[in-house]
Length: 109
Length: 120
Image (cartoon, rainbow over the protein chains, first blue to last red):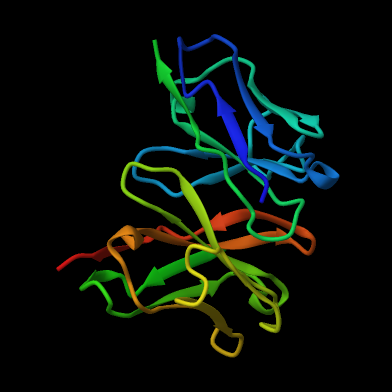
């Protein structure tokens, strides 16, 4: 089972700033099959990025994903108020279980 | 418009059973693998179970293997999760989710979730 470790656990930033979230895998993620999700309080998760760097339909271009192997990054170029939420990475390059990271909470500074 | 509507959650005693349903609409249900993911109160996401479009292939997390069973009825566009021998640690919001595409089991649509509470 691939374990995903996200850092930092909490990231305090201000609107307009740049956010960089990290996801590190315990072993290489095949095919860069890594996704990022955003979850706002009381809502279901929303797919942001799949295949490490492809934006899902309707996702603003301030969200970008990068990385390969064991190290992946989600970058939000200029934070909007609605971006303050919890972010999860998920790998789907191996046989099940398709694991999630523990999450990074992006909070207003 | 893609919609996933879960139902069947509620309060159940330890050792009891529940069956969750997820009614799908707005897309070709028979062409997509489907998944259940849960989230314990205040915790992160946990992948639980997945099923192929035909229903012939099924996968379960070790934490629920032997107790939970995923299934689908393609004639009714409905996904199910049969949960037996429930434990307090199964208390969570349960989400059904649609796979993005064949070979891309990221989840592009999610239901609103249904709460399961296991308590005496």
